[in-house]
Structure formats: C-alpha cells, structure tokens
Image 1: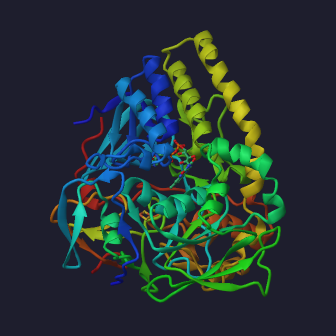
Image 2 (image 1 turned 90 degrees about the vertical axis):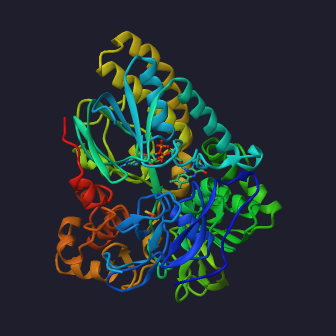
Length: 103
Length: 467
Ligand SMILES: Cc1cc2nc3c(=O)[nH]c(=O)nc-3n(C[C@H](O)[C@H](O)[C@H](O)COP(=O)(O)OP(=O)(O)OC[C@H]3O[C@@H](n4cnc5c(N)ncnc54)[C@H](O)[C@@H]3O)c2cc1C
Ligand code: FES
C-alpha cells in the first residue's frame, strides 16, 4: 500500500456531509457523505487502488470520470467496482484489487 | 420503480443532454435523462454532492454558477433525471440501465446520445504510475469533491483545460511547478486570434495573465517525456519539442514532483453510438472516430440522435446548441411539432452554431494532435491499460501482418478489456496508421459489446423482465 501526505481536503467554500468511517484493507479511514470512495482514499494519501494482472504494477485513479476502469476495487465484496464512481457509505469495506479480482 | 416506456430517452446529463431535454419537454415530449453521475451537470458543470453545502459560491468558480442556472431551468421544467444510472446496453428501441445491483430495460421511441468526451490518453513511459492523472480527473476531484490530488504538481499536454486547472490548483493551495504546453511558441503567439475562441469556449478569463500573476511558469514548446518513480511518481523528465511535437534531443530536464496532470485535449465517448450501430467517420479535428449525422443531428438510424462532445469535441457552448437542435428534431420525429414550427425554432439555433463554428477552426489548429505526440512510447510502454498490451506488442503484431485493430485483438487482447477500448482505442488508431502507412480513416475502431461499462454478474441475474 502506498501512503503519502500529498493530498488534502479543501475546506473553503464548502461544508461537507456527515463524517463516518470506511475500511481500506482493514485499516479505518475517514470519509464524508457524498464523497466517492476514490476521493476518500486519495484524501487519506492512499493512491494505489489496485495491482495490474500481468505486471502486478500499482495503479491509481487515472480518468476520474468512470471511463478508464483503472480504479477497480473490491467494494463491499463486489469486485471490479469503480472507486471513482461509487459513493462512500458508513462502514463500507474496501479492498485493493489484485489482478482480475482475487485479493 | 422506473416506468418501462418513455417517448424520448436521453443518455448524458451534461450541457448537451440537459439542453435537449429542455427543448423536447417544451415541445410536449415525455423525456427522461439518464446519467451515471450522482449529480446532473456533466463534466463542465460538475456539482458537489447533494450532502455538501456550498457556503461560499464565489469559491466555486464561474462554471458552478452557470451550471446552477442550467440546473434550475431543468428543475423548473420538471424534467425527470435518473442519476447514478449507468446505461450499459442500447438498441434503437430500448436501453438497459444499471443501478444498485439491479438492471432494467426501458423502451423508448427516440434516443439522444449525449455522452460527452474524456481526456485523450497519450501513452509515455511511466504514465501508469499512481500520481499520474488526467487533467480532467484532477479537476473533477477538485471541483466536485474538493480534494486536492497532490502537492507538487506538474501539468503537461496542450489546450486551455490545463491553464484553467493550473489556476484552480494554485488557488486551492497546491504548489504548481509548471504548465508544459506542446504548442510551439510561434503558434502560441497567434494568441490574439486564439485567445478569442479559448475565452469563448472556456470562460472569459485571461488564464495566461493569471498564471503570470501567480508566478507559475507556462513553458511553451515543452512536454513530459517520462514519469519516474517506484510505487508512485517522484520525478518528471521533460524536454523541448519542435513544431511537430517531436522531442528535441539534448533538451531533457528532470523536475521533482509528486503529481502529474496530463491534458492533451478530449476524445469523444462513442461506445453507445457504436454499439447501437450508427455509421461513424474519422475526423482528426473533432477528436477521432465520431458518429455521422444530418444537419439536425439525426444519425444513420432514424430516431437516434447525437449531440455534444460525444459527437465531436467542440466545447460546452456548442454542446448546448447541438442538444437543443437534437431535442427539437426528436420532438418533430415524435410528431409533437410540425415542419414549420420545427424550422422556425431551429433557425436561430443553426445561426448560433454557425457563429460558434467560425472560432473552432483556430482552436482545432492549435491543439489537434501532431505526429510527435505518439512517438514517446518505448517497446515496454503500456498502451492498453486493461490487458497491459505494450507498444512493442503492437509493433510485433503489425510486423507479422496486422493492418487493422481487429487483427491486433487475438494476440494483444487490446480492446477486449474492461474499458471497452476507450483508453487504447484512440492511440491504436494513430499507432497502427503510422506503423502501416495507412490513413486513420482506414483503421476502423474496435467493435463494442455490452455491457459498455462493467456491471456485476449479480445485477444481470437480478434483471427485471423486459417489457
Ligand atoms: C473531466 C473534464 C473536465 C472538463 N473541464 C472543463 C472546464 O473546466 N471548462 C470547460 O469549458 N470545459 C471543460 N471540459 C469540456 C466540457 O466538459 C465539455 O465541452 C462539455 O461538458 C460537453 O458537454 P456534453 O453535454 O457534450 O458532455 P458531458 O458534459 O461530458 O456530459 C456527458 C454525460 O454523459 C454521461 N454518460 C456517458 N456515458 C454514459 C453511460 N453509458 N451511462 C450513463 N451516463 C453516461 C456522463 O456521466 C456525463 O455526465 C471538461 C471535460 C472533461 C472530460
Ligand atoms: S479512474 Fe477511470 S474509471 Fe475510475
């Protein structure tokens, strides 16, 4: 897992929705109602969302708008779920996806 | 439970789809708009989620305000928008929708495809490293989620979106290292002419002046050659380019960055128009393969219309006019308005489109891809992110006789992945054309099969009976 403190939530101009927690590979992180899973992970400095099938390389958000499928994760047990299009919900279980879905 | 028949189904709640819905509804058509985003507005008018409260509108930018205006008009007209719904299959008389592990079919008498565009993928060494994003993706995080994707940010590519984004990032507190613009200095100096349309298409602000005020270097005639790092991007190798965007040897420099935004202009989303069976043509100026249509936006299939960037990239103002036209023409097809009423209402729209079109030529000339763009790949560079087919694999297949994308499929598996060739397709058309010496027009895009976006097997099993 890649952790950095390269990213951050911007607080000016906006009041976020209710705060809750989700887990990423067992670790608990903060998310806000209305955030996508990818936004919550990136805000937590967690950039690697999956590992590619053949080269086993880390991959992250790329297009950010649901087109490229690079952000596929196992979300609440469902593989190949796009983290950039999926709203975070309280208690959600998110797992880094390895290859086509075993984890 | 959604009704399973509508007169007009519109896919895409961006400027094009919403404008189409407004016109159609005003003409008495029962129209429903489907969009996989949780909020309507499309890419430019992307709104924060409903649970976020905007406390200071001035911080949200002009697009937010203009978007609110369009959305208020849509709300006042009582138009039904189905948000969070992915359209995963389409035929001339129905579409298949997916949401929350459920799939259902909707019959429709007419369809408008207003599916928009996305950032042009340009493979180069290191472009799959975490921390290398599309400019649009970083902007979406910023605009709708209010999340900064990185701290030390480099922007590279071409066109106005990078200038817009650099300012937005700096304002949000990022350290913007530089904006690398491929267009070479001479071309860029055409600015008095070029700034006209850029302003028109991208807000009336002088982004270049703003960059200068913020002391962000705008490096014209420079580009990203390689992204470096182990688990994520740590450095960018940049270099100068000539008029054809080819690298000038010996000009390489390395910059420390933790984030790279790549914005090379947009390519149209055509998977639904290809799947439904519309005829397509290649147009480099409009972003590649696009659905053909008549003057009033009807495709080769009767009662199937296209509008907005998905039918040729031309910006939000054009998208809105095209949407209006498509909405009106659909109303005419559905016999809600007669011939003379149609022409009466269409005339001013056609006039505005004609005026906007004049500016387009300059804009296209500035950022339409030039040959050097596709020459930074090495044999090891991944072109197809899904199946991890590389430039080397592609060269090998061509040397063994492949002359079309279909012939690449068996050995590369490119185009067979989850993204349905949205990422590799536009590049492979250019690469195969170059390697085989054939024109792009001769390199047909991959065919598309449902589902156009991955949906879980369980949803297919949960599918409600059609009709
Ligand atoms: C990420 C991004 C950022 C941009 N930022 C700017 C900017 O700052 N300023 C500017 O002037 N222009 C910007 N542009 C360009 C501008 O967005 C477009 O010119 C304009 O939005 C085109 O409008 P449209 O209605 O044709 O498409 P869009 O606004 O792209 O809307 C298309 C809609 O269709 C939906 N859709 C597509 N396929 C499906 C499907 N299968 N099922 C369900 N829904 C689907 C999408 O979710 C999307 O909301 C940006 C473009 C992108 C891609
Ligand atoms: S980042 Fe491209 S689909 Fe999510």
